[in-house]
Image 1: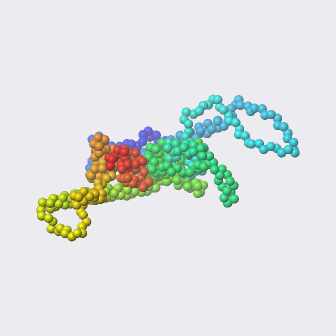
Image 2: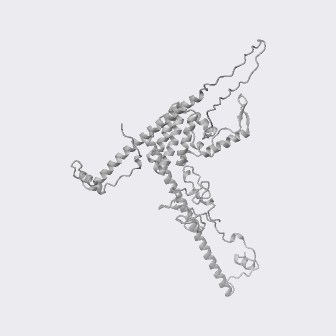
Image 3: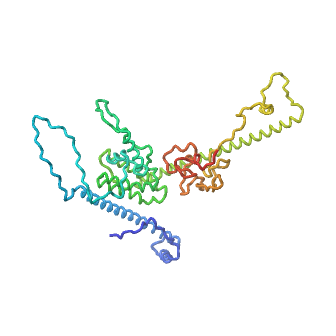
Length: 473
C-alpha cells in the first residue's frame, strides 16, 4: 500500500535545476550515451524540470483520490452515527410503562357509534436530553419541496439571506391566512395558503455565487439533505461531488473558480433532471474534464466580448467629451469675434446696411441685450453635467478613459480602484469590474454579476454614477 501524501502537491514549486547543487546530476545526464538529446546543462535542467512536473501531476491525482477516499470514509461514519442516534431516539425508555386503560363499555347495537376525532399520541419527554447548542436553520418551503422531490435548487436558499427571506415568508403566511381554491372543472373547493411556495425573485444563481459563499453554503445544503433522510448513496455522491469541486486543481485562479461554479450548477441540474425523466442518473462525483474545459472556454469568450463592449463604451464617451469640448471652444471663439466686431462698429461710421424702411427687422441677440429686452433662455449655452469618472469619481473635464488617479476628486480620499495595463478597471483584489455597471443606466447582463461592483465604495447595489462618494453635479 502506498504511503499517504501529507501535503497537497499542487502547492509545491518546481526547483531551479540550474543551481550548483544539481550540477552533478546535470553532468551525469550530459555524459550518458542513452540521452543523445541532452548536450548542455540547460537541456539537462529542462529534462529534470519535465520529469518533476510529470511526477508532481501524478502525485496531485493520487492526493485527490486520497482526499476523496477520506471524505467518503468520513461521510460513512457520519451516516452510521446518525442512523444509530435515530434508532436510539425512536426506542422508548426502558422504565416507561403505558398508563392503565379503563375497560371499554360495550355499546348497544341499535345506537350508532359517535364519530371521534383522531388524537395525536402524546410525545415522550427525555429528561436526559436538552436542547442543542446549534439550532438548525429552516429554508423556504419552495426549497424544501425541491429537495424532497429530488429536484434542482439553487444553493442561495441555504445562505443567511435565503434563511432570512424564508423566515419572512413564513411570518407572512401566518399573518395572511388562507383563501378558497379550486371549484373549476368539477374540482372540489378547498383552503390554500395565500402565500404559496414559489421561487424567490432575490435568489442568486449558483454561477454568480462568490466562491467563499459556495464553500460555506454547500455544507448547509448537505446537512439539510441528511435531515430529510436522503438515500445514503445519493447523499454520499453529492458530498463527494462537492469535495472534488473544492479540491480541483484549477480552483487557485479566479477564472478556474468561476468555471467550477458553473460546472457544478450545470452538472447538478442535469443530474436532478435525469432523475425526474428516467428515474435513474449518472455518477455525479466523476468530474468530466472535457465539459469543464468547454465551460472555461465559453467564459473566456464571454469575458473577451464584455471587455470589447466596455472599451467601445469608453471610446464613445471619450469621443462625445472631445466633441463637446470642441463645440464649446468654437462657440467661445465665435462669441469673442462677434464681440470684437460690435465694439469696432461703435467707433466707426454707421453700418453699411442701415435699415431705412419702417418695417423692423428681427432684432438680434445683441440688440436685445442693449435694449434690455428679455432674451430667450435657450439662446444661452447650457453647461453639460458630465457623468462621474469611474476611477476618481470627479465630473471635471479630463480623459476618463485613461484616468488612473490615486485619490478621488476631493483630493483627500484615496481611490479604491485603478486601471491595469490594458485600461480595464480592477478592484483592490485584482478582479476586473464591469464598466457598463458604473454608468447611470447600469448593466442589463446577468452573466457576470460577480463583476458588478461600485468602483467608489465597493457596494453591489449601484455603480459609480450613483455612488455617494461621487462629485455632486
